[in-house]
Length: 134
Ligand SMILES: Nc1ncnc2c1ncn2[C@@H]1O[C@H](COP(=O)(O)OP(=O)(O)O)[C@@H](O)[C@H]1O
Ligand SMILES: [Mg+2]
Figure 1 (cartoon, rainbow, N blue to C red):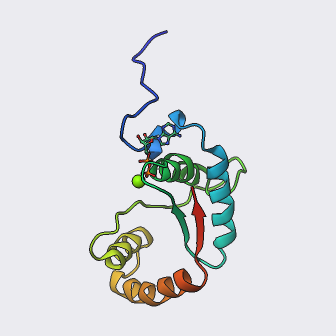
Figure 2: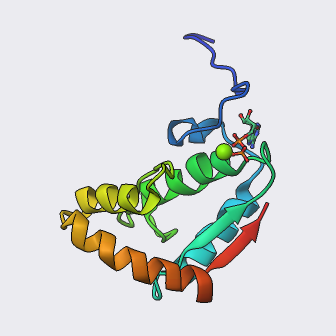
């Protein structure tokens, strides 16, 4: 064997997108989330993944779900286009943060997006949001 060996255990750190090759054991949950997200694309409703601290939510979403979406979008077809995606932390002003980051990604106006999100996100969370418990 040659080259440095990396430990597959990351200590307290969550697995990131770059750790996907070392991430195992959550294949079913990742597939379920991808399946649900693909269904929700038509209506643009959010999917909330919940669970106790340490259950593995961050790792599953980063190394399981986003790593896949970044590579192959929502299709298992080889050569399927990757989907743009971003990770953000809900700050003291989560909608403004979301609007700023998504606008930068999409090349749109952050303040217009912020106003649209305020109504549509709240409505979809209240009336059409989906939840998956780990
Ligand atoms: N599939 C896995 N295999 C091994 N360790 C894992 C796995 N998923 C998460 N962990 C570890 O468990 C701990 C908690 O994971 P994390 O994703 O931060 O959970 P949460 O976001 O739910 O609090 C971290 O130390 C992480 O490295
Ligand atoms: Mg977390």
